[in-house]
Image (cartoon, rainbow, N blue to C red; front, side, top):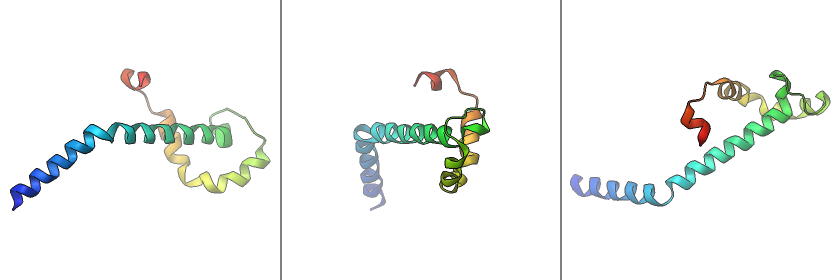
Amino acid sequence: MKFWKKVKTSLKNIIYGSTVADMVRTYKKMAFDINAALMIVTIGDLIGVIVIPPIYKYNLLVHWFPYIDVWKRELLREKEFLEKLG
């Protein structure tokens, strides 16, 4: 019984990996890039990029506050050569 369960799980993972895994990874990367661009526009003055006046940023800061630390860490993380290509 366990053998067939392992075979079923393996086949499911193979089919998932060969059909939609790349699309899911691309979607997640695009979503992160769009999110990072919005963060730069709204609170980019933390890194020296001022795009919109401060009065509008205060309205958006409530929504972005939980993501500020993650955004800073990802922005300042050292990239590998292959990461820069893709």
